Structures are given as C-alpha cells and as structure tokens.
Length: 335
Image (cartoon, rainbow, N blue to C red):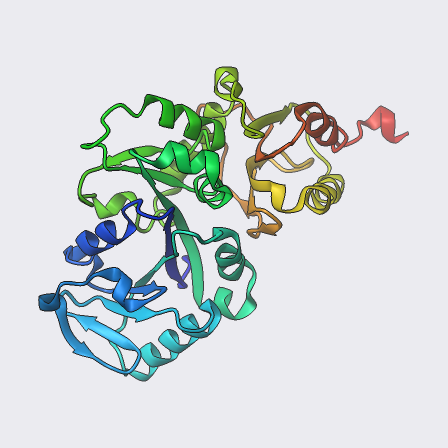
C-alpha cells in the first residue's frame, strides 16, 4: 500500500552555503508548483518581487504556485497550520514540503520532529536531507563549526556549491567522504539543479532505493576514507550470521544511550533470524525511523547484516563486538 503522507525535504547547510540561491531557482521550476516551503524568516528567501502573487497573514503564494511561510513558532505548529489550511481550502493543495534550516542550525531536532512526533508523522513523512556545502569555505567550516559537521553527517545528498569560484574540491570531498561516505555529492552552479535529485526520493521504485543503499554501504568499506585527524568518522560493521532482533534492539538502545549526540547517523540492512527479507534500519542521533522490511536484498549485496555508524569518538572494535553479540543462537547453543 502506498504512503499517502506528504513528503518533506529538509534543506540544510552552513552560513553562506547557497541554500537561498538553491531555493530561489527551485521555486520557479514547474516540478515544484505544488510545494510548500518553510523558511526561518520569509525575508531570508530573497524572493524576487515578481514572483509574489498574493500574501496572507502567514502564507505567501508565488506565481509559480509554490507556497512560502515563515517558521515563526515551532515546526510542529507550522506543519499543522499548513495542513489544516490545505484541508480547509484556504491555500492551494500542496503535494510536498521543503524545510530550510538556518545556517547555524543543528538539523537533529528538526529530524526528530519529522520522524518521532506523532502528530507530524500522521500526515507527513521525511523524504530526504539535502545539505549544501560551500566549496570555498566549506572545509574551514567543517573544521571550526560542529553544526556544519552535523549538517554534512546526516545528509542523504551533498550539494557542492560555488565550485566556479573553487574548482578544486578534492580536499573537501575527502573530508565529506569520511563524514558521510554514502551520500552522493553533486556540484551545483548558481543553484541550478534537477529537482528529481532532491524530491520524492522515498517514493522511487524500491530497486532504485536498494541500489542507492548498496552503494552507501559499500562506500563505507573503503579504509582509506577513514584516515583523517577528525574525531568524526564512519564505521562499517558486518555480521554474516543472522541476528536476534531482541538482542539487536537492546544493543542499539544501549549504544544510543551511551553515545547520545555523538552518534550522528546509523543506517544499514539487518538479517533477522527466521526472515528471508532484509530489514532496513536508519536513524539520526537518538531518533530512529520505523524499521522497514524490504522485498529482497539488493542484487549486489550479500544476504547478511551490514551497518554503518557515523559519529564522534566511536571505537570500531567496540561497535563490532556489540553487533557480534547480537547473533542469534545456533541450535547447539540453544541446547
């Protein structure tokens, strides 16, 4: 059964990374004509005057058909109000939402709202996290500002902006590969981007999503990507034997409690004892999506558990030992 909830795309990135330029270009594309955009302050969008058609007390309707509103209270209230106005016919019926965070925002609380809040989760579903990274100042921001690190670490897609000013992005991309090895990196000039790369990601055919997941897990295996002085890195774990689900959830809960905000992201496929299908698990810090059963293992993926943990001061040996302890007992062990 298809998910009827409204998909939400989170657009984040450090100060000056190009979020406003990206939004301005996307809002005039016909693919976004039925999109509601939530920004921290309406003036931050820098909308050209000719784009504005009508303005209500809280919502701006653009000539393209898009809606814009300011995040004046909290995200739950804003999403609720938008949905109620949509259902009452007070604003056009939007089919998706894009949320732009401030450049200094930690994206984790926003993700927590989208994933864990029962009111929001009834009508909206997180589609993807898109992070803009400035090719000129991005490396310095990653070294100096923890918010920038978190924004990159939780991304589903990384957009490299201002590459016309700084074409050589090798050092920046190496740093991003350590932080988030599976997130595809896309160069974006002046905000020009195919909307299909950032919209409706969760509703693509399962085969496409499985291929992306397989690349994400494989990317984390490269040991050269972990050779960096930073205390934040990706750790790839695997167990060939089936896992006991009760043991796994207990271990994961203990890991979340112990690591807290230092655990930026977890993503992987789990082989649960007694099940032929893989189970997709993913979370950001202490907030986890509901586990999802997939129809089949990715074609190129071996049918055993693989998990990637991205975080600060995590010990690979300890993580591996913890996951190993989740193996389901064999018949001989059960006796």
